[in-house]
Image (cartoon, rainbow, N blue to C red; front, side):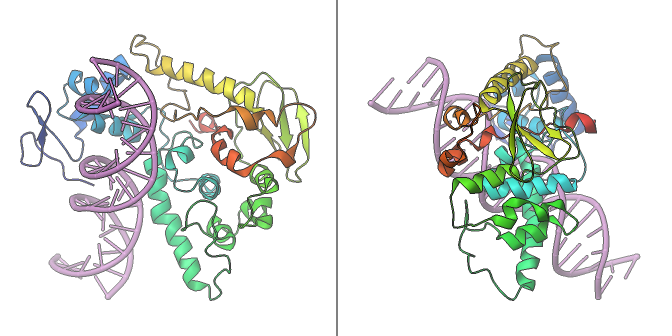
Length: 316
DNA sequence: AATCGCCGCAACCGCCGGATA
DNA sequence: ATATCCGGCGGTTGCGGCGAT
């Protein structure tokens, strides 16, 4: 945390108007100003937000404060075991791409997840590795970065009571492999959250994947967790739904529609939507799924097409 | 009660990429 | 084609809380 600063103290700098800009902790008054402005006007240019809201802050600071603290859709409190598992799992797929991980945990921020990882999970992994006398022969192997935990560490870090331990990915994971089958396991092993996923109102067919990798096509208007099965929507519809989400989100922040604030928008500010939705998604279309054609690199590129887990509504 | 050290987390920093002039 | 601005991201910092001594 940074020390709160009074206006005009030595550690502030000037904006383009020559006004001193505050740094450090936000005061309740500043929070009020920013919150009121955002609720009234929605998101625009952050420099304008800072200026128009009467804040002696740079736009960047306002943006961070809003995203990490003031956003109405933020979920507070400790991470649930399900969230922990999901974070660990997504980190194994994405590495330190905190924003992408956060995009799949509605109500959580990248900063929050990053802090959680660096404090809690890393510490756990460290303890595990120090207590383990037999380092993994594949310790240098990793999917993304060199500090990726190995399989055993991941399992242990997720907790012994966790169904994470039985996830196919971590039972079958070959970290030296970038095979398509591994990616099937990755998707297969996405945590079964107890909350309904209620994803995006998809209208076209998707696929159910259960824990034995049995895939069946389903027609549906809703997506998510179906009593032990995990619904992977067709990526085309994900793309379509993402577009819808973007539209919804734009209206959420549309400064031209200040009354259109939707506090149930679960993906607000998690809008780093990858543009590359196409190619791999088509592999999930049609009666026959050509799993063998899945390409790991392509999937990593397209990993944003994994479902947005929307269990926020059931918490609020 | 006082001190110390660790830890969590809010916020800053620097870099990058895209948009615009 | 270049410069500038802005937003977004990951890494890092350092204050404040809290438990241990």
